[in-house]
Length: 218
Image (cartoon, rainbow, N blue to C red):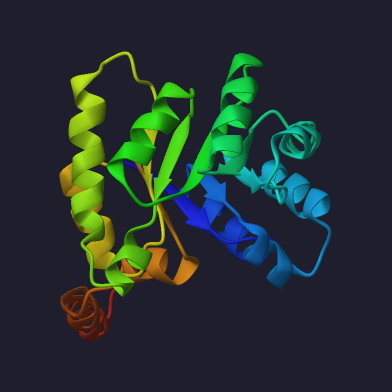
């Protein structure tokens, strides 16, 4: 499974990238707003840090303006994935961008039928939102499973399932078990995957014993 981080905080991205944990980055208008800088500057800086796909989202809702915005974003760096919403205009834009050889991330997916259409439109990534479905008492993981089954039925589909709106470590584990190609997580969730109380307890015991041994490796 590939790991993307869902943030526009370049300091966080840089630290996680230096640890070798990142395959890419996803952003959205809300995250760009939090960054407090022009989107072109933020995306350019992220693309300098991460060599994998960096999703930059259009703000337009009509086809023609999506094309203008998407092409401008794609000019920032070769690894920009243009992010478009799962609407009819978004799917039309996806097909145009895909025909131009550009990576497209189709976002705000909440049904398997939507994911099927995104694959037919040539999306590089489909972003089903797990957490938001859970919020309304639906099973986000069931959606991931449905999309996986459909995509596996049609080997000509090259669209990768990018599990998004991830809230917990369990979301990550379950998405991996089902077979999502990518998961994008907030920095705090990615860091929490590392932690386990027994790891901390074991390390504490080893260090205490090493101190009693009075030895030094260096």
